[in-house]
Length: 156
Image (cartoon, rainbow, N blue to C red; front, side, top):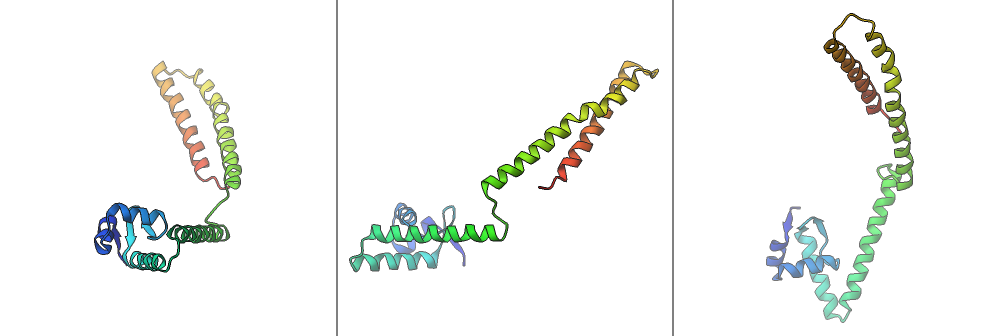
């Protein structure tokens, strides 16, 4: 089903666009995405809202029950995400990031010692300063590329 703008929903239901946004915040109109609504769900929600008002049910209580229902649905989606391994707890994420940062720090610190011998060997060559600088840059670039390649394949 297509999604419709606040303006379209307001026109269909003979409401002001601001009222559509208010009813959305109250949980009467479920929002699909930013400023987009499913027309049928909005019509059904508005009918339930009006019916509840005419039956004497407190619209604020109905809205609160709707919010609770929405929150329960979100919680179920989060649980399903955990079960399907598509949602990670912040503690697990912090642990894995700490491991990654430690590995990055270790790998970066290993660059200087790996390059030192190659750079020291350049002193004994018969090259001019410009050639030596170019060789040093190449040694460093290669080592940086190796480090980045190694880190890009990092797995938790």
